[in-house]
Image (cartoon, rainbow, N blue to C red):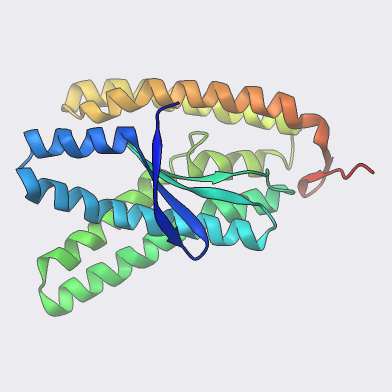
Length: 225
C-alpha cells in the first residue's frame, strides 16, 4: 500500500492524499498545461471530496465508522471501518455520493446558464460525469454496491457479491476495448484495478459472511454476546 498524508479534516472526517495522487499532479503538470492543468485537477478533486463526504455522512448516520477520505490517482474513497448492517444501509451509503454529485451538477449547470460563467458549467458537467461513472454497476464502484444490495433480496451475501463481481469483470473488459478503440487509455489503466478490487470484495465477502443473517430485506448483522 502506498503512503498517504493527512491534509486536515472536514466535519470530523480526515482527508488524506495518496502518493499516487501526487503522481497524477506531476503527470498533469508535465503533459497537460503546467499549473493550469494542476488547478483543473484540484478543482475536479474538490468535487470528488464532496462526493465522498456524501458517503461518509450517510455512513455515520447508519452507524458505520469512517476512518477517512483518501484521494488517489483514480479518484477518492471513503474508507469504512465497519460494514453496513443491512442491504438497505449499503444501498443508502452507496447512493449518497452520486446524489451529491447530481445536486452539484444541477447547481453548476443552472448557474452556468444564468451567469454565463464557463467554470460553473464545467463544474456541472464534471459532476454529472462523476455521478454517471460511479453508477456503473461494477463492484466496488457505487453502482456495484447498489447492485449487490439489490441482489441480496434474492441471494445470500456471498452469491450476491460474486454476481456483482462478474458484472464488474465484464465492465473491466469493456473498459479495455472501449479505451483502446477511442483512445481513452485511462480506462485501460483502470480495468486491472477494477478486476483486482472485485477479487478483494469476493474474499472479504467470504471472510465476513458468517457475521450476517438474511431476511427479505437483505442481510442484517448478527450480534454475538
